[in-house]
Image (cartoon, rainbow, N blue to C red; front, side):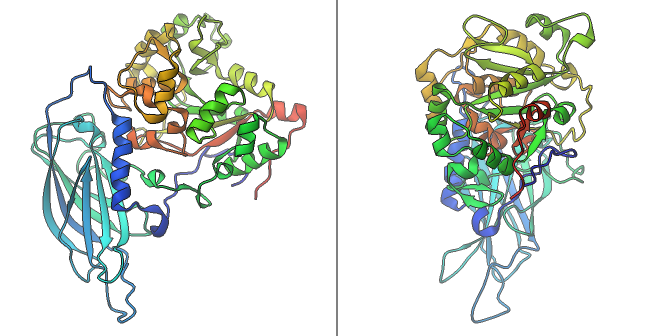
Length: 483
């Protein structure tokens, strides 16, 4: 990856892994559902809707890959079948022989009783039946019902491109038997850009990055030695420049929008404990807020009558010690430039990365975007959590690792919990989500749990390292060059 500042797009789109490494097996899909369930786990104090009945129609496959590599015949084609999974339920289609364009025309009914309809994720896994060897993967598709505009009793037909393979698609339909989802932004017949799909490759056993399948700290971010010693050498820092690529704050500033996130990798003992417990580079996360309202700025004591004295972009975070001096730490609002400069002046080798929020229904978000109009509940939420202090319960912090917290308490918030609550208020995480089961890693591409959980097709771009050009020039820091 180039180390030059990115002036057109801060982050490249998520790449799809190949057929051998990218698509999950049946057992992995079950594991995936368990992980998704742990993220979707609901607060028992919030009542769930009645059981939802979903009919899934599998019509046909088109231009599938030929996974049949017979040594005896060059004319053999795949014998495809499809596994359809919702939560813990998996149903299997008829196996059709010797075709790359199978016609199934089958219908499967699922009854889901422990999550709301908009939280339902439908996973389609295609396989080639092999008589002598293990069945081979032919790609998968995964769609969240929150993306679709569904009317009770109607069937939403769509074509889904297969992930994990170079070509192929399936035609399917979803019937909402006893519910509506009128918040979905994709309506039937208005699918010119395709259906936004959930990316599942990050739930594989191995961590996958743009260079292939790897499992070490070195390729995810900071080395284990760097984390264990709490040091980041210039050599290590330049390696991370090459791994993530670099964007300068001076160029990034105008590209940032509300909902972008910044991950950081601390060097103190508490950060080290988080990194080692999670096997992750990241120990802290902050939420980007552009164009905060007058009410929010006044609540956080940052309002000035002169617009020229106010920043356009702010960081919302929960920390043990706040720049705004609030006793007990906790939630704070800080101007982005002040915040980044404060971090980088501590050590030029400290690591910040940005992930930008992508909203398929709003492919172009203007720089003067109104949070009150786009995310009407966000302002109220930010005002509500102003008095929250930093989480004092060590048990709750440890429970994040095991996703075992069972109730929410917004009077005390740790960093990733605060960020998750913001996405709930934006309508991008389900109401009732146990936000205190999110850690910084869950917002990174090391896990991508949040990319799978986000509603309405929203997702985050890959990480890009943020540096400050003026500071680099002042201290003579040289950005690591491309590999």
